[in-house]
Image (cartoon, rainbow, N blue to C red; front, side, top):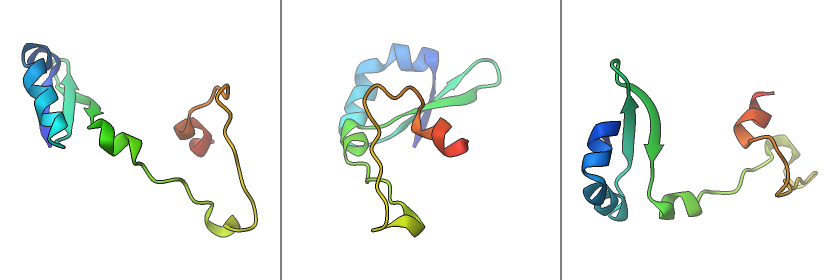
Length: 79
């Protein structure tokens, strides 16, 4: 996994897209401390993410998240 600053990403955007098409993930860092703030992944990896299982409630319960639900999965799991 390659790490790039915002400036490097902007300067070599076409090359980054080629790397993404080949399946490579890119970490984006920001600021003087080069704090890692994001990861850009290929769309194929995003589109094929597995469905979340219910663990102990498997085959006993179900769930559905509607399109207008305003809390992210991360926020819901943290609460």
